[in-house]
Every structure is written in C-alpha cells, then in structure tokens.
Length: 456
Image 1 (cartoon, rainbow, N blue to C red):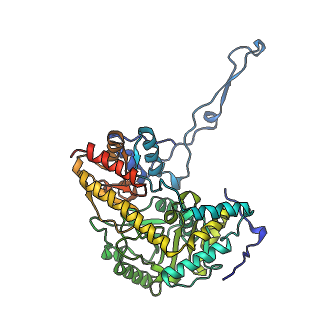
Image 2: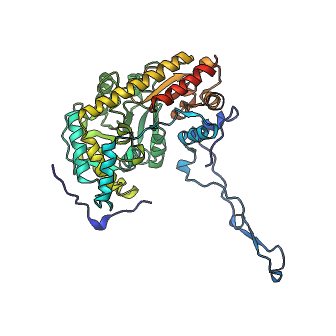
Image 3: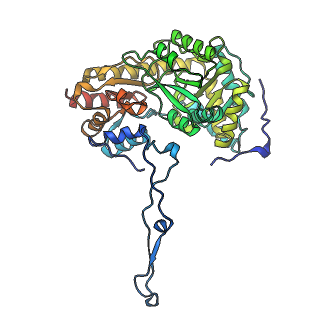
C-alpha cells in the first residue's frame, strides 16, 4: 500500500548527575527512588545572586573575581522522587572499576550490514530533512506488513501507525496522550523504570500487581480485585523485562476478558517479540475484541542490535492513535529520517534473519545460564528477552544493591539490582538481573570471573 504524508507543513512542532555511589550505607538511598521526598525550600532571591567582590582597588588594574553560591538541584514535583536511572549508574561503575557489563541491555556487537548500508544510502540520497510527523510512509508500510505477518491483523499504515523516537517515546506519547490526571493505570512489577516515571508525568495513579518467582505468573484474582471504576488502562510487557517471562495465552485471555468487561485499555510493550525462546509470542491486540482497546508498542533496536538509532512505533486504532499523535507531535514531532528508511529495509528482512537471531541468542543464553548455575546462583527460567533473573542470597549479602556493589568491586562483573523495578523495593531485594546480549567471549569471561571469585 502506497501512502503519502498529509501532515500540513505549517503544523511542524519542535521538541524541546551525579552518580549515586553505591555502598552498604546507601541501600536506603536506592529505596528513595520509590519514596517521595520533601520539597526543597525555595532559596531567597538574594541567596541565589552571584556575589562580585573586588580583591583590590580597581585602580590597581587587578581583575575582579566572581564567586557563585551553589545552587540547589531543581526538579518538578512529579519527578522529584526519581533519581539517575539505575542503568546509567551501573554503566558508570562498570567503567570506573573495569568490570564486565552484564547489566544494561545493549549489545556489544553491531547490527547487520545490510541495514547500516541502507542508512548510509539514505543519507547519500538526501533523505535528511524532517520526515512526516507520523513516519516515513515506506516504514509505516513495512511495519504494517510485519504486523500482519506476525498477528494476522491488517492495519492502515497511514491512520494507525505512529513512528516514534524509540519505544520509550511511544510509551511516553501513549501515556501523555491517553491518560488523564487521576486515572488509574495497573503495572505488573517488576517493570521497566520509565513506565512509572512517565505515568507520574501524566498525573496517573499507579497500581501495582507483583509477579513473583519462580514462574512470575499473573495473580488473576488480585488483578480482578485491583481493577476499579477509575482504572483507565493496564500496561504490560511481554516478553517481560526484567524477568524473561512470557505471558501465556491463558493469562492474556484472562486479562483481555477483564479489560472488555470493565472497559479498560491495554498498552503493550513488545520490543522483545523476536526473542521468544520457549513459546510463541502472542500480541494481545490479536485476541478477540482487543484491537479496538489496545496500543501495541515496539521498536527496531532489540531485534537488529541498533539500540542507538531509537526507532520505535505505536500501533492502535484511529480513535486511540489520535491521542498518541497529539502527544508525539509536541514531544519530538518526527524521528530521524535516514534511519527510518533503513528501518523499512530491516523489517523486510527474510525469515531466515529471525531464525538465525534466535539461534544466536539461545547459544548466548546457554553460556550465561550454565555459568550462573555453576557459580552458585539460583537461576529462574527465562522464556524470552535477553535477560536472566537470579537469586543472589546464597552469597550472604543483605540485599540486591549490596550484592551488585560487591559484584562490581570485588568480582569485576556488573548486574542490575531489581529492587528499583518494584513499587515496593523489598519485593526485589533478593533478585538481580543479568543480560546475555554480549558476544560469547565477553559472556565466558564474566562467567569465569564469577566461578573463580564468588564464595557462598
């Protein structure tokens, strides 16, 4: 289907730390991520003025020196309880201590040549100006083609697909465009940390349902009792970061029935859909009666190892796409034009690409899982994503933050403490997350360090 951008030219919108040192004394500081802080008193005008002092008489010819008072950090109340993201903190510590980074989920290998060559060609061909606000038409068509192949659903690329700057912007545009202040939104904890922050910006009331080991299954009765007349939406991620859980068909059918019964929307983050190892991925929008109440969000980065390109998208019926696009138009307006052209090429890759991708990641997963078990961890099953969650308690540290600090400084390996992914950090204090989106040499080196140095 050939489509043309019809976004009026005169409607283009233009969008607009410090590291927390980890130590055994700072677990409470990490818990502060989920705890509202007291507002910082507003300094007086005179206190914030720079003071200028003349060290010697100006006539003497010596220059003046300027002394500035230290300014308090300023942030809007809706974001004051959030600190520097855990991923930034851990990556910085990895560099400081020379540790192998199995924390943040970005590959240490590059994406496929045919996609990079398509980006280069797009730049050479002059595709470098603002794209249509909702996406380069060829990419929208490629997304629609891929979605039909994966789910059987036929969507209008011009009216039902919005290209965003990564899935994180798709999440933000969806929350800001469809959630009103005071609306209740249900999250399944643990969850990707941007969910709660974005919902806070939207003024939503967040309600949590905790998924617990070993299988992280959905407590359906708890979900039923949590839904109220004020529930606007459920936000879920499958395959699930950080646990690697895949929502089963039975769980998704139960969620769908509750949403239809209570007139609740669903926002699904499906960025790991091509990294499904133990079962087939099911898109919630494909279930009967669900497309009309679902926003499906995805991206290029995880599947093609091009996380820095930040190409994402949201698929929704026109009545929901309207809200997503209204927010998107004032957040970024448009996403990188040459990268969108290259993304269209990527999404038309043959099925053999996805088969090889899954095979490669299964080999990486096996190296990490077997190594973690040999090192003494209790490893929980991971059916999808490129993450594995383990129980660190056999090693005797008091909580996940203390263990991750020890792992970095003494062992030389980075993991992510999962307590920051819960509304109640206590729920995650026994768990840490490792990623296997690294080359096999890096994974083996990290495993060897842990097997050699970790002691129960």
